[in-house]
Amino acid sequence: MKAQSFDLVIVGAGPVGLMCAYLARLSGLSAIVLDKSEAPLEVGRADALNARTLQLLELAGLFGEIYPLGKPCNTSSVWKDGRFVSRQSAWWDDLEGCFHRHFLMLGQSFLEKSLDAKLRELGASVRRRAPVERVEVTEEGCRTTLVGGELLESKYVVGADGSRSLVRELFGIPFVIERPQIVWAVIDAELETDFPKVPEIIVFQADTSDVAWIPREGAIDRFYVRMDTKDFTLEDAMAKVNRATWPHAVSLKKLVWFSRFSVKESVAESYFVRDRVFLAGDAAHIHSVNGGQGLNTGLADAFNLIWKLALVLKRGAPSSLLASYESERKPVAVSVIESSGELVRSTKYSATGTHAEDYVKIVERRAGNITGMGIRYGRDGLDGQRLPDFELRSGGETRRIYSLLDYSRYTLLVFGVASPPAPLPDYVRRVDVPDGVPTAAEAILVRPDGYIAAHGTLAEMSARIETPEALVHGL
Image (cartoon, rainbow, N blue to C red; front, side):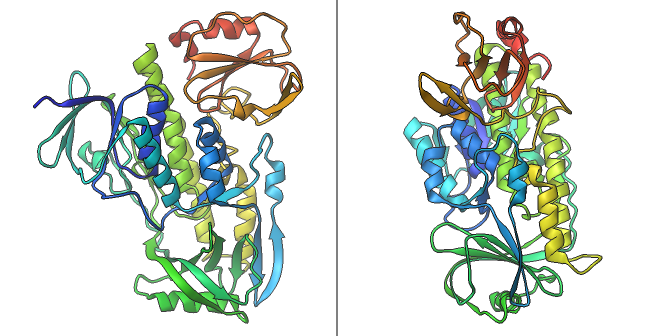
């Protein structure tokens, strides 16, 4: 039997693998997703989408479907001994060009189910109960063998198969894990309580700061409870919750999910091996849940990678472009570990005994990282930063610039230049901005993932987009 052939074989049907497949279909690539699970996630795991992820969902046409499912949240508060201490949200004010100034509190399962349904609509294949046995790099590309012997051929393989990644293991990619000996309980439930709850993140200051109360979609809430031991029960965790909220009481009306996890931190030594195999999401980086950066970082991996693969496979761009995936995304993972690590350690260690207040100050200081809005590629200047979100007026209509971007193509923004549109390659679209210019540049070339590739005169940018080779120069 002849092996099926695809542009991409994606191992792992979590949100990152599914997003890779969805973006691949938008970009004209064929892809198959393989997973040993029987169905998308039902409950648990990640709990929030950050401001940058909400922008990325707009680029992919997913925002309108996903956003109504969640609960916006842009504040956090500190409580101590049953009393309100402070409320914070000022860090949003310092984020330039940010439209969605909040997190969207939404369980990971909603995103997985939505992507799974979208892929079925697009005719993309998600093969479940299909565990992978091995992946080999050949002269022509990759050969993936399923348990049972079925063969799949592809140009590239993406390992989005989680922290215990088989793909990473098969290619011997070092993944040294640091364990800071911090253990947490996670409780998702419908609650009964007399606590004066509002939809915000609450950090409780007791002897340390070992309880956080997180709003979620629908009728449920989440508690993170630091336990400092691997041997504990749900009752033990709820006892800590009630100590933190005293003199108010909290009980479980309906338990949705209960889990234990120990903090682990690691970044894969390589994200791109043998010129054919990529790692993304938890397969490439793991860290504390503090700051809610795991899912968001993994999704950003997908948005960074897939347009580059499409440009190489469909537009003749040089394959050297693909190395920029690791050079851009690996430093981000390192920064995420730094921020989430500082947050999680502050719940246990504080020189002044003000753990909860310390925690909130760290969030404020690292807001660019935690919200995703401060992530950039390159050290300084306009090139490499995310395109700011701004409004433009044309023909009496006001529109946000992110509503005009398209993940499947570059966008050439032309500011206040009265010139007739010249013919463009089909992978570039022009958007004229007659007023409200946010920069002195005459034209800005925006990558499919919403980052600025280059800026300058219209003539310079027109020359830049003449060929795929010139388009990606400097990445």
